Image (cartoon, rainbow, N blue to C red):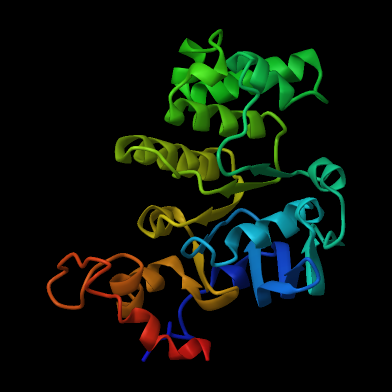
Length: 282
């Protein structure tokens, strides 16, 4: 049976006001396919909140609802609400959401591949003055020194890790109040992932940034998150402070890949009975 997180555990959500609040959200595609069912979560101001789960769990669908892009794929928020900075954005367009400071770094980077690194950064700050652009570029180059070295290179020829740095840097040029990161570790080598996550941690501490992190890489995400939600089959099945989630035996076994005995690494083949045990979903 699933080990639950102690209700007496410190809850970062109780200490900080919610900047993003999702309540009982249901999302349906093509008026037929339910992708998200009765999901509630909150992202407090100044916190890092991680939304974890395997491919197809509904994470990206929820993020599309938050960033106003559901309609591009015939998706619709049919029940519940999404509020950002105390405003209802459940059916708002992307341009309105972006103007309020909620900025997305999309899965797969989606750079302007034919533009240079510096031109991509400029595109992220198209509403800024020349002086503001210089200040923001200096901040990005401080976070990502490699981008300063590559600033005149065409973005499409960069490595995957460097492209991810450009994607994050472009988002920072808009001075987000809330930065949403969709699978920032996808397709990257372990050393590059470590570097990206070190920078995300710096952004939280040095820039006091609120971050909503959507990931499959549970181990990395839990290391920097304050609070964690886990999704399966369109539902949140478990949530709690990151420290408590890391010590949860079921999370260790099924999401971090460690058995209860001796910290031995387990393979997917060893834990394939997991789906048969997920009775909390029924």
